[in-house]
View 1 (tube, helix red, strand yellow):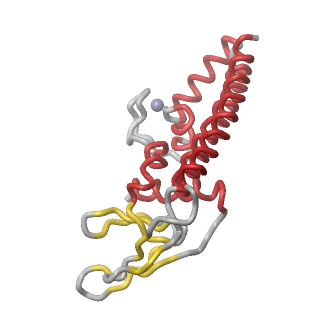
View 2: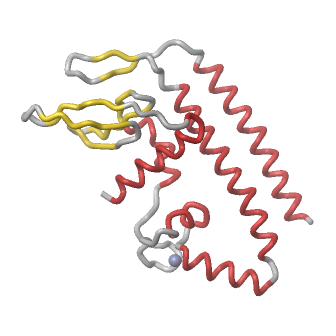
View 3: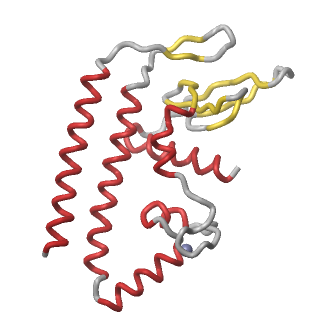
Length: 195
Ligand SMILES: [Zn+2]
């Protein structure tokens, strides 16, 4: 249940980076009891043998979101000290540092003693911008390769079909602009480390 909650929020966050909130929802029939369960944008659930979600108002299998999922996946325990990561600040810290909040505090304390903290903090901000570029790029590529054209199949599932935009051309444009931004940020990092 915990893992499910993380996925839902993280996928939503990535999407909201560019589109803002939408309130699309769909009703899905489950089991034989003709029970209707409502799912809304960003929800992730299992039905049959597949995991589903609703993205841009369209019900689809979760595999399309694998890129985003991999980026935000967090293990149960801290790779650094082995403690279970369940505190509120563990998650944002894991995303940036790949360790729990306590380990980050300890690490930063040691840097302060050595007088390396300011430089470290500046690099961290630039590295975070690099992460955001990656996140936006994978979101856009996913959006481009997911057509909004859809139809309702016989069993009531909304399915999508391709068409509309030139996927190859748009993918190229996205990759190119992400590359330019990434190179700019990497140069910034190198300049700081060299100074
Ligand atoms: Zn730790």
